[in-house]
Image (cartoon, rainbow, N blue to C red):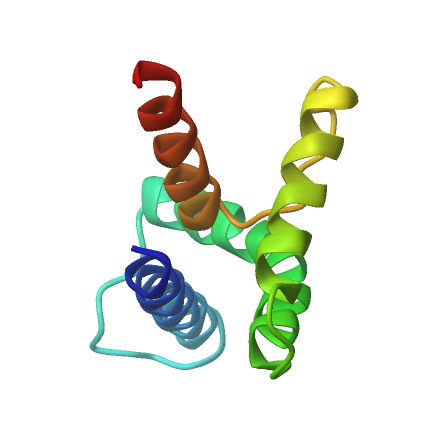
Length: 108
């Protein structure tokens, strides 16, 4: 599930880049591509906010030490709960996976 969340984050980042490229092209050049809607720009802004959260998580996953990824996710979730979710450390898709796993544990 974590790999799927990473894949979705990458896909959303790609869509964000395409939206901003279309937006920039419409401002600078006469372009045949459709201008992005306000909704697409809002989604792109939200994804742009996820990039600083995603990069540390990606680096920690790339570290070949066992338990580092789980430790980081546990620390991030604990800090988010402790601070009342005033700031977020995990990217959106990865937080969904962690929340889903927490709900399954609560049901058992």
